[in-house]
Image (cartoon, rainbow, N blue to C red; front, side, top):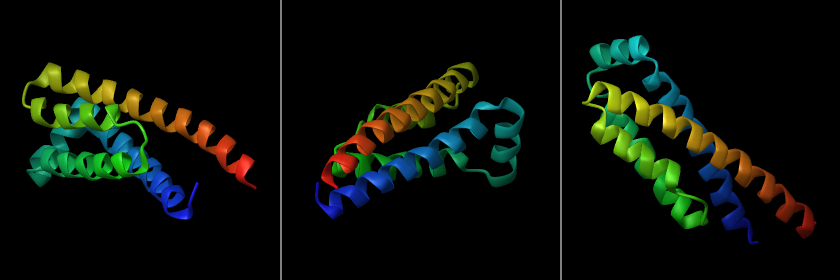
Length: 113
C-alpha cells in the first residue's frame, strides 16, 4: 500500500468520525432544533461534510454507505421522524464502518512492516 493511499484512508476515517459526531448532534431532537434555529443551515453543512467524506472514501476505496445515508438524511431531514431515524442509522453505520476498516487497516499496515 503506498503512502498516498494510506493517507487517504486516514482522512476517510477522520471525516467519517467527524460526520458521525455531527450526526449524533442532529439525532438529538432538542439539540438539533437549537442548532437549526441558531445557525439556519446545518443541513447544508452536513451535506457538505458527507459529500467531502464520500469523495475521500471513493478515492481511498473504503466503504461509502454511511456517507450516502448521510446525504439522504440531509435531504430528508425536513420530515421530523424520517430525518431523525436516518440520522440515528447513519451514526451507527458510520461508526461500524470506521471500526471495521480500522481493524482491517491495522492488519494490512502490520504486514507491510
